[in-house]
Length: 96
Image 1 (tube, rainbow, N blue to C red):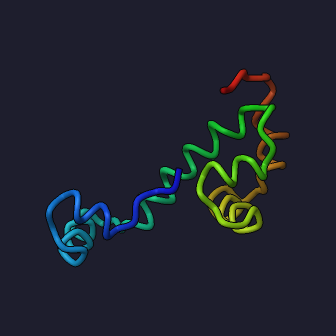
Image 2: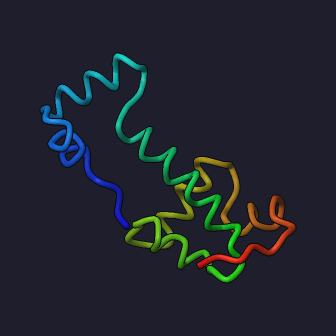
């Protein structure tokens, strides 16, 4: 599923987007940073599933294009999803 937008989060919290951004800035963070951290954690879990292709992982994370996921993952980890799998994953994991 796609991650909620900053606007959706602000609405859920009954505040304006500006107030949400200000609160996050007070914590030395930003909405995009939190979103990227969540996507990275989810990507690592999904990449552990050998039955999911990298394209399937990109789709599950809400990326419109697999290439956008590959670029983001490389930015986050300094390696491609395929390189990450080869380096860090030695065990097959059953996933649903």
